[in-house]
Image 1 (cartoon, one colour):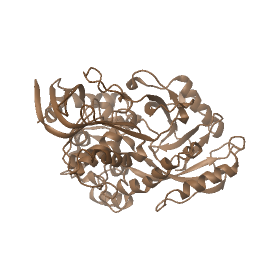
Image 2 (cartoon, one colour; image 1 turned 60 degrees about the horizontal axis):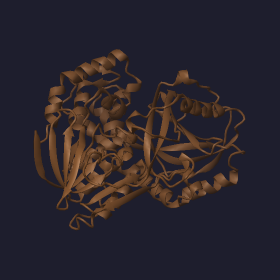
Image 3 (tube, one colour; image 1 turned 90 degrees about the vertical axis):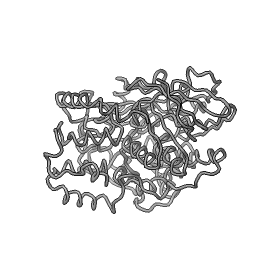
Image 4 (cartoon, one colour; image 1 turned 120 degrees about the vertical axis):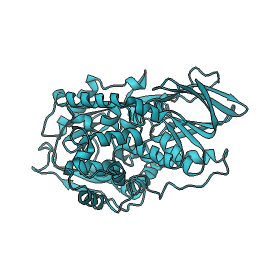
Length: 504
């Protein structure tokens, strides 16, 4: 059945970091917004990042000073706006004399410290390594600097919640299957991938924020959609057992000029990445190759005393970045900056190219500057100072203390995970819960039926992967029988979830 909806100001295609960031900003300025995502929120590139909020130290070598300055400024904004999802982190850079001289690294770190005002993060310094460090004995000198870590997929979900609070309509598993323009208006056909229902949505403007699918979003439409040349670059990561006891991360230089991060991950693990290789094909089918896996393993083994092999790889993931093709020979040298294109030849269409998680808010504000030409009545900027859902607390330690007192029956592991995942929304998730028995069925490692229900009803989760890899990282911990039990539970409530998602 094909239903016709009211006219929206903005229809956004893509539920990644850029799409949800634009949706939240636009809805907060008073625009009538609908966002459609053909899969789950952050199911593409936005959940396959290195999980960093950073300026991009290596981008200085490519003279991308504007991008670095903007990203460094955003570190402070995001640390304030989502402190449960984003936390400061120190990075250690071992010195390899044959790769970059000390003076060059010192100069780069001086710029990194100086390009934007630091409020919460300490500056860089030189350090010495000794027997207590996890590095090989030959490495004696190094440097240390500050950046931040982020739960990337939960940040996307939180932005979608923010957009919904501002009255945006968020439609996951809703695929754009037809687009046409008439009388300076868009007519978009959406297919609900769960129910199979079709709906026609009318919108005054479209924002194409579909990431690596940016050139495919209008396939099958009758319009002559011209997009820029996009270079798809695949980045891969591996997860292994914890490499070292400290909370600091390591930035490793390689002979090919690239860098690899070694980051403490989910308490018991280490995240290693990323690679940079050109990619062709369906972005949803991107996966790590044995050659890429060996590349990451060999770099780590060059620097660390603890040696790893492919047998130690517990999990891997690959993401495809949609970058503008600037003619660079190496995939690692292609600019990570973003570009916005406005086309008004048929009806207003704003296309988003590139971007990175750190600068999503700036990208959204730049998009609003373009959209203001079409919607001059919309409100002004607001996202720089308003905290995101779940961030209504004084400090992470204060929040954890309060949760511990209020829910004293919960384990410390549960409380820490709830605090860092939901922040102050933990109270909403546990509303009416007075003891552990009230949480319902336990699927393992503290994941309860109550929490699963919350993810489905408040965070658009639908599948096992949504819950175990994007709303949480419990996929690293649950055994096959526990996963099967979770699958059975989701199957049992599938009709209720589908009914809740039926468009109204």
